[in-house]
Image 1 (cartoon, one colour):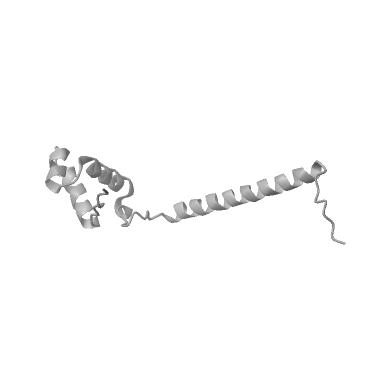
Image 2 (cartoon, one colour):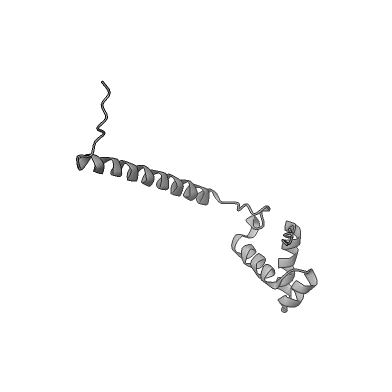
Length: 105
C-alpha cells in the first residue's frame, strides 16, 4: 500500500527554515512542525545554497542563465558525439572493404 506524498507550500518551508535558524534543537522543531528532521535539514541546505530561487515548486529546478547554457551545451555535445560515432562506424566499415553489395539495375 503506497502512502500519499505530502507537499508543503513555499511559505511553510521558508518559515520552517527561519525558525530553524533561531532554534538549537532542530529535532524538537521538526516534531512541532510535523515533519522529519531530515526534511528540515534538506530545506535548510537548499535555502543556504540557492536563497531566492529555492523551493520553486513541483520539483522543477530554476536554473540561472549560465546553468541553462551549460545544460544546452552538454546536450549538443552528446548529440555531436553520437553523430561522430555513427560516422566513424560507417567509414570504418568502408575502409575494411565492407560495402553494400546490392545493385539496382
